[in-house]
Image 1 (tube, rainbow, N blue to C red):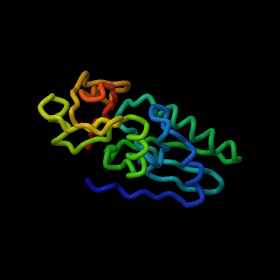
Image 2: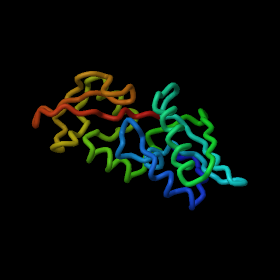
Image 3: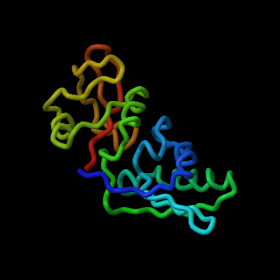
Length: 166
């Protein structure tokens, strides 16, 4: 999937980098790739935000956090949810994927491989603790709907796997 072009004004980036995803707090909204546009017009910051999936409960929190972050520097922010094109795990930055793994969440695989591991047919998900691929699916739903719960058969640690969304 081709990453949709974003338009983010440079002077807004430090504030956006300071706003975290409430479900994976080591990721900023920029790491996650949910900000499609952020521009300032006549003193108002206009932000277009794409949810990771329709109905994601974190979007309300992120919207509130964005408005709060900008209000703390004396700016009014308006957040608009954009549903199309749909968000993709391809939009997570490489830095974000590395932060996710360091936090203990396995990075998403490709769509084909994702289906194979979620059906229990292949052992492709790498344990973020020890690096082994000797892992198995425990539950198709982990701590949130966008993650599945796995366990490593080598170090025996449970961990979340971020499902591939395209």
